[in-house]
Image 1 (tube, rainbow, N blue to C red):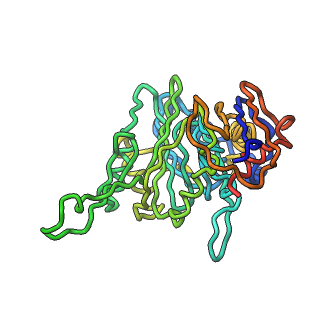
Image 2 (image 1 turned 60 degrees about the vertical axis):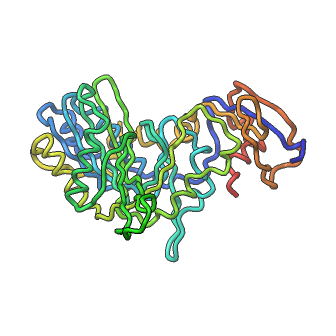
Image 3 (image 1 turned 30 degrees about the vertical axis):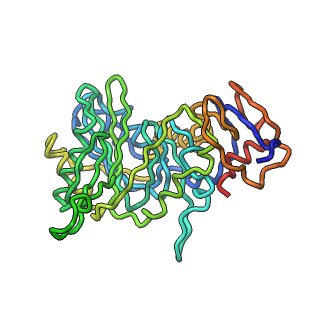
Length: 370
């Protein structure tokens, strides 16, 4: 590696006004919905509520979810079910440059008939990065913080899956839903080690707790056609150069459970009502019109903003050389970087478009995946 192409830089919040790696496709004007949704959510007369989203906009669904968390009656228990178009959703305290391949997200999912951009979303809850598409179901339970339990509603989903004929599912020690797959019956001459099965993650969970309310939301891989495309989206080519104070994802092998979305929703609703009682009036459908609610619209604008997606990134250090704090060996830098990069270290400096727009560091972070 040339001695003129070494550098180390520490970024601290806010990292603002950066050019996005891909355009945001969801900036849609919304009509103002009728008032019953908000009044129904906050009414003490509705202690149990079920909502099913008809939109697949990931930003809008997360904004609706946050509205339900903040506006629902403090003694109520809610179930919210939805699914999203292809997107990578990172946790509240994660680093998009470390958790994703931004170039791959920009390129999208390709097949013989279509090419889809993959949206990048930062949610308000913690946890790791996950991939969403229409073959993945998202479920959320909001309830009083006093009765919050990390496994209670994951077990609810496990019971629903078992009723649908999915074998070997359970909640593990990380509060995820996994499926144990046993190998085909082996002959008596087979060794015991060869007869061991494999465990796959089928649902991950994340949480957000306030003084009065708790939110537990999770995914469930039903019949996603994109399992083979997930790993490249979630592997950053800049990983070897970045040391972050944020939360890093724990990678696990994943698998579809092989059930349809509608039957999954029906079974989860039945299990929810089995736990808490029948919901008067049944479930309430929520669609694009929900974006007309002022609080939902403001939440949507925040989730789509560069300040939220990138500017909320916890402090991280990008370094092309090993250091005492991060002694990992570094690979060669990409050949498209300028040859006259000189060694330097910037610590505790706020970075924005004014000092990064023409910087090689900006090009490196946004284009490492070329």
